Length: 424
Length: 170
Image (cartoon, rainbow over all chains, first blue to last red; front, side, top):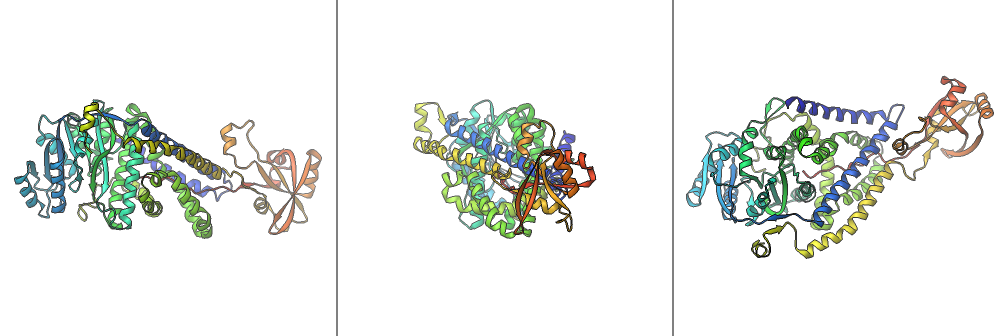
């Protein structure tokens, strides 16, 4: 397994280098390679966009039907590390008040900011199970401990939420309803931002979340292969979670223990066993996003490293259990950022050599075409349009390049944001 | 939103918005699909140089030797290609022609072998005559004139080379 992952990881460098080399080849004697490559990339983009839209159309034409919740027991696990005491209290209270027959478990992961006091107060007044680690062991270990030692035997479903997540009253029952179907192993809910209106960045992130959930995750849900059950609100079949939890806790990538993107890996382990994973748009939760560019980029660095690592992991098993997902990850999700490296270089060269062309031609046509590609934003979430425009530019200027940074540092185990912005 | 009323109707819940909102969603596809079709066409067409003019002037400049004006001619020939190229290759081929520089005596030999024509283009505001050679490609000309005796350059068709549409919402 480790060798296969290493081979795929190495192949990504080949893709990146190949794209750059093809760009440079346009300055050689023959520009045809570069032109054909560009054309091929754009063709791939169009095919992928159609694929995405067809899935979304399928969802609109025939939405999924799930059985109704019938008071199956739900364990809600809330790992907490150096969280703001007010935020974690709000999170626990909403989880406690949410509909459903439930056991609420809070694990303090060796916090050093004194949040334990608040947790103990809450444990004395609310019916929650509190466990405190003496030292910080990581969210993975917290989930492992909760699953193996704290969850009641009669629990049917396990819902994990972040310590700053606020749950809608119906969120728990909504998110577990798909799990009443035996073929579905996990599900994830909708995430909205509490601080979306704080500034331009948070508005942009609100759009970014909306697209991620209502376009990409929704499309993945149609083929029942959502690749990431968000840490904000994820539900798992309890028996399945118990089956995978040891493998989850012991994950290594290229010899290094993995410490972040645990939500994506847990989802991978469910998919790997042939179970379906779906997205439930009306299981609603709220969270906060970093309100500074620095904080947001730190969070993204961690996410993108996890994205690459887990996409590689997906490729190691998906051909056996989810072929469409395999093709999607191989042909676009994992490779596109590196395949388009040469095109980015071309843009930079063009911008330096002919800035007028960028302003008068490339930028306007790019904005128009991006609006078409993300037509769901103006049509279904019109108020997020300004955020979309900012997101499009921000992606090109900053977020795209994080993919390259993440590729080179994917083995890095640091949490990046954890000590500075535990809320991220 | 509560599930209770629906529970009475059926033991299933449809993950969707209200019927009216769902109808609006479905109708919106009448806008989305044509827009996507237009998007697809414009992306692919711009990348493949649809409707763009071949850049004969650029190719002529590239092969023009210093002080060429009196000593030879620019000829336009088909670009060398494999016999019976597959449809995909044809689709990807933006340009089928090359401009070559040959001397006056070589032009005379070419004219005896092939039927020729003339086309005039504008280079830096001045007219420039090109000789079109029917039925010959650069490979044929090299075989006839000697491989080292001429310089050719593919006639480029302007194309869009940067359209970075892969922003993802992970």
